[in-house]
Image (tube, rainbow, N blue to C red; front, side):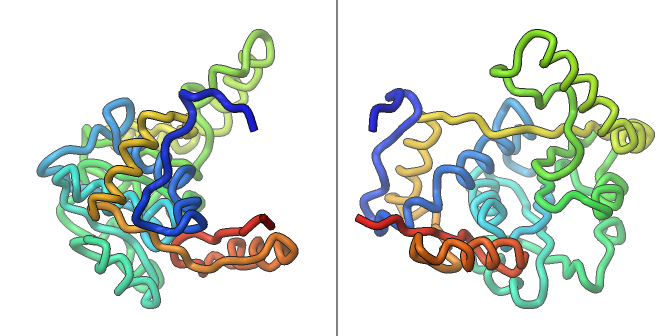
Amino acid sequence: MAIDENLVAAAPRTVELADAAALPLAGLTAQQALGAAHLDVGPGDNLLVTGGAGGVGLLAIQLAKWHGAHVTTTASTLGRELVLAVGADEVIDYHTQKISAVSPPFDKVFDLVGGDALGDVVSATRRGGRVVSVTGPLTAGSVTADIVGLRRAIVRAGAAVMSRGIRKRAAGAGVSYEHFFMAPDGAGLAELSGLVDDGALTLTVDSRFAFSDFRSAFARLESRHAKGKVVIELPA
């Protein structure tokens, strides 16, 4: 198929191609959230990644450690060993512990869970800290550039209304809250591919399904018990 060359990169050579399919969406999401335009994670940062045993979370933990951060993540008992294996420094069992009970507070948070836990995340972040979410309420700044004109104005206004509650709570705690969408980026993907080949980034595939059994793949994904990425293999 024809595609813009700026959106693609060579696949890692050290993993099977089907496993490499687990890299682009999750990898770019983690890379961009942790990058200079959003959390700007660097050496010494005390970072929280919620939902660390999922596809994005496992890559985010590794990339954050690569950037020199101290990484705490939330996971169930079943996911604990997996997140520790990819480099997490500390694990919070979300079934038994409140995030805000952990001290000291976090400098930065990459939220992959959203929902009712988001308020607790804000409470666990120090004043002046940042929370970036891919699952929480939309913010006006997260509206992508391809939405233009009147539609853009309407969507931005709607996003501002949707996120008013969490933004107000964050502002009261002296914390910034932002939702963002990943943007395709060939150069970023090439960097991720290189990290895989260098052994600095490990891909975790929870399960593979044939295209004819795509319903089972989505059932596994929606169960919220997947550890890593769920891959659907297309017929040759």
